[in-house]
Length: 45
Length: 138
Image (tube, rainbow over all chains, first blue to last red; front, side, top):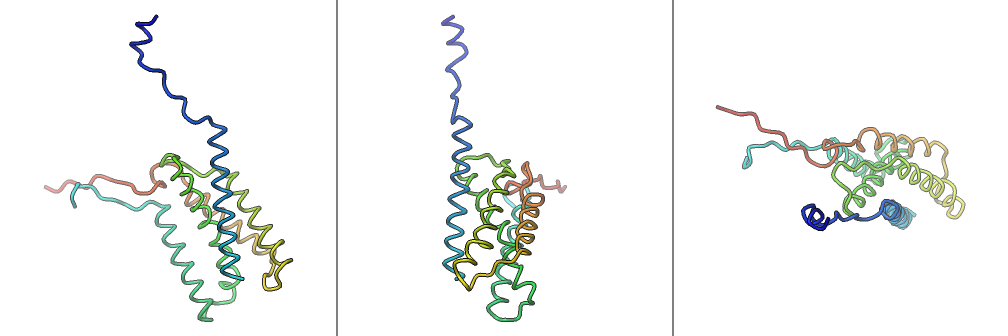
């Protein structure tokens, strides 16, 4: 079993879980939106 | 021509360039007073969502999303709802210089549809640059 495991190489990295990716995307969307609204408000009014 | 390949700008890149030129024209026209009334009233509102959503898409890409990444519709709709509520309901109630106009919502919606169906296309065509082989010349 150990030799088969060694032949397969290290287990692939799982990376960032999907829910954390989704949270990061929503955070980025909110940050860009908030920044744009503040900027537009400051520049136009 | 170093690599023997031609680089064709993507639909997203061309659309963004056109929108930025239009945005500059609208702002200059407003400042100069020569822009027609419908451009003054609705130009910014139509251009707002495609430019804003492109910024959001670029932020997602910079954070590691692949080149074929397509901004989900739920993000676009959330931006539409927040922008509409803020600029058409909240701000006119707090500042007399701001005006709430129901037609502005239609302009925001038009901008969102333009972004979603023209600029936010999946695949390499929408992701920046498309490299095509240069035709062989013998």
